[in-house]
Image 1 (cartoon, rainbow, N blue to C red):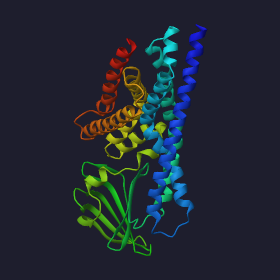
Image 2 (image 1 turned 30 degrees about the horizontal axis):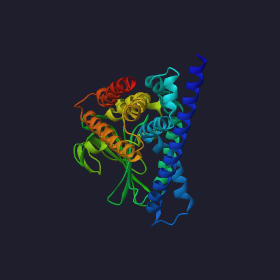
Image 3 (image 1 turned 120 degrees about the vertical axis):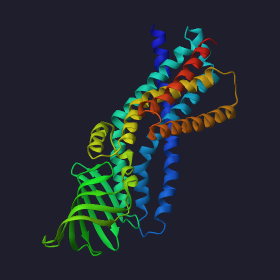
Image 4 (image 1 turned 180 degrees about the vertical axis):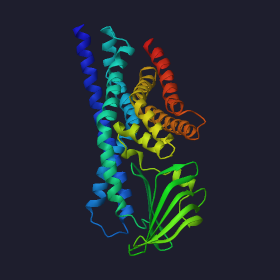
Length: 363
């Protein structure tokens, strides 16, 4: 019994070290690649050198979160390959352990790692991503429009015919914005007039405002009870309904509140509910990828051929990525439920891996 505890502790320590090494390698690669992207973005702007470095530092943690399933896959192959080539797996089998027993310890580590990232790391990366968005938006050229959903309603900022307009609506219902107010400013941000309307049909870029009242800068009524007037916008229903902030800026612990807010404002919550299900499934996704790495190493007869494992890893990452992307597309188009779109790829990978692990355990 004590012998098994010592072996399991050794496996846990070795696998955790491999994961940390892999995370460090991916962190360096992500930092370099994103730094080039930020430098390219700021090449025509007169900014200090530290800004691309700062933005890259803020972006890398969220990139690592997205790449973690593939990090676990690579770490698993690296770890199992290591103990196999050092004949440690043979010594463990002599001591009475099976391949399944060897896989269990890293599997538990993968699940705990997934829970830790979702529960503790994700709130931190969401804050960093939000900071990244704020800093970068201040340096973007032609920042002429903006839309946001808050507890106070739907807010839209746009540049229209050399005027800076701010639009607020209570909610989106069917194809109309309800209880709409348009604040018009000139290009120097001087307040010009205000338009209030009971609703606005936004099925096209040419909005139709109904039951409108127009006031000047001093709140004097210029016209009221106007049955309908037109307003030219850069948003229509399709564009507005699909518009939302970067999901990386939403903490796991705030997702349900965001879903309620979206639905209250009349927005589609499919993407946010998908984000929630992906977060809940994340530890199991890591487990499935770890089991898959065990199948590729302990369940095969490939020996001393690192190129074979590199090829297998690359192909697997590509297939898993496109399989997830395809399933997510089915969910967004509502051909599958959100739950099925998220959990189906993980379940298929898990079933395939479980069958492979059973086969590897018999070797």
